[in-house]
Length: 302
Image (tube, rainbow, N blue to C red; front, side):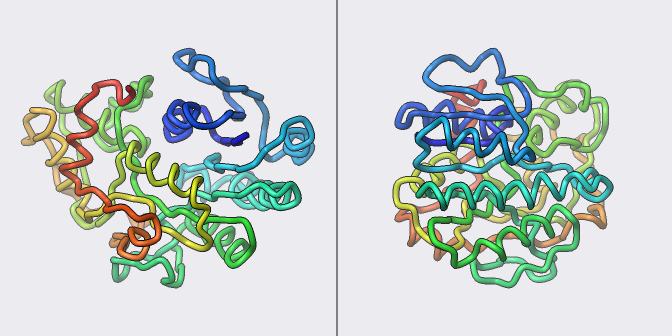
């Protein structure tokens, strides 16, 4: 059985739907699953900060692997709310300990935010140097799990795609609030003839959610040790990525405004993927290839 934490989130929901074709899924989240999710899995609602809740999962189910996606992803919350440390660090370490004690492989999904963004093209073995708490929390878990048995660390970056239920309340703002709604936010603003501001100086390796799913699926099969970069195969600025999205969606890009990025975000966090491609045995897709895949289905799901 595969345990997926953060199952009600953007990545979790996508992975849960597709991995349920290959695995018996045990899904958990502090939120209820979207009503669009149907059958083929078991769901237990709970808080991963509660060690007794986690222990109960392993006591009541035969878990063979864990895909740990649950996290506090807001940079603002991580900077200002101490509880984010419990969620992002302590819960992850407790979950790994339970996985190890039950011979379950542990897949920890990390982030490009572990780097300071001064050079870019970071390799899997580049030393983390985070500048915000979110990155610091991810880097701490990486450091404490690195070289331990039964764990794969998968760094990803700006995971995009269509959300089934985007938080439209955010779309009245002229900057992207929820990074998982990057595409929906840009599309909503441009379709309404409104401006959207995107940084020209933040270089990233954007990742279609379907691409990340395929990479994680192979990780769960091969169970490679150490650190992998699970992301798209091409680097681009957030501004230029917005232009590319507008072009693929047939929207006028004149209302996309180039701005300087916020100080809390590292500037150049592109990820080198050559080693990870060899380990997983696949070629990572270009941005255009990922956008073509995304636009095949307006819902983002098959």
